[in-house]
Image (cartoon, rainbow, N blue to C red; front, side, top):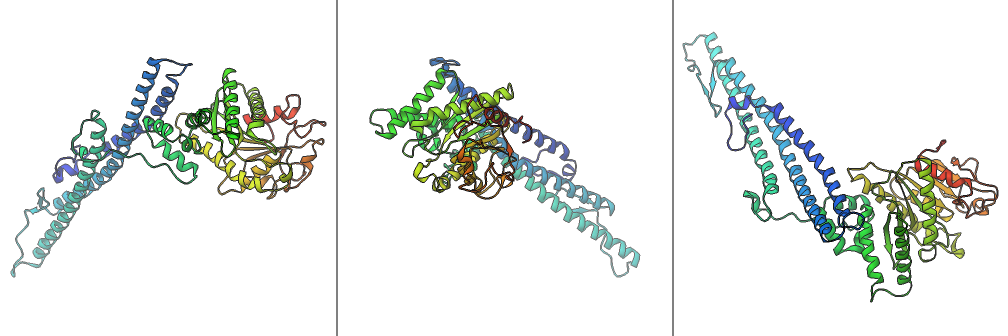
Length: 512
């Protein structure tokens, strides 16, 4: 078609525009823009791996990583420019279709009454105006031609107005692409007058979806800059990918261990976390520091790659569990659940999270809900964050997510269910629960609810906080237990519950 970029076309040209071809071209450009995002994500992954000991270390590796980050940033800019242009191009497509329709109608109307329209829509070949002596039938014919010419002119005016809108859209569509195609540091025509794009501000509200959208809107270089400039803020943001939070939280951890860093309990906690990360890495286990807030005493550590796992298990422990004393034990439990899931579904990529993201109560306050009322919303945000981070990724599908809660952790899970919005979990596993408020399993917002309660576990029979899997009518799918299995034995390798939990995490257990 004759592109309406520099000047309005004639009516004949407007009527001959290839609107179908234009629409097809815009659709192909949209498909190309959609393909850019997955390629950018792959470049980002490659850039993070380059320069590391397990991939390509040393100055050459770091230089290659910097080059890949730059390439990713350029790809992000190109994708943004194409997205902006596509909005204008879709407007162009609609306006061009209108212009073609009006132009064809104007020409057909003019031809039907025997007149010719010029490029401006003026009619030529009109008959002389009827005089007093004109016969009635001749007068009617002349008036019909005049009305037809007026209608044709009006349609021609609409066609030219639509063509002008198409021209404006075409010009707007050119600007971002010209800017994206300019050499670094060189202006590109009219876009040189535009200011450089400003990265969106970090969201202040604790909204995981907003955080995920903010992060995905940054270029690779801007993401790395945010991590370096504000590691504590970035590391605490539910909704960001695990690799970013891990990198940010490790900076926070390094600062806590550095001379002049915090003393006392915070430094002690930092030492415990650093030791556990090092131990996991020496064993060859991928490990991610998902949360590290030493002042609040909160930690979450993932075993496996949360950004790529097909199944995720989030372990929520109960009373008297603190990061500085119990992180090694909770990580052992997370590793056991991960191994059980991998055994249940060989080849499945599994990640498990030791989630110590709330202050657990002590014995004196174990019968109170205060800790769960604070921990429940935090767990809900953490789950929402995992879901939002994976939803914005384009290279891997969303994982199956299972909450494995023990003892008072099930009370926290019940409070997470009561938080606004649906719970971002596919399955819940309730181990040795002292009860959950709000009714039976059907109220827990998960497609699957599994429970384990041993006759040798008195906590599971307390019912302090509501119904539990010990109730025959609770509605959960029971997991096997041993008669002598105590309150802390649900994740022991020599009891049948662990293998069943692995099947739930992997999504292969019957009766879910």
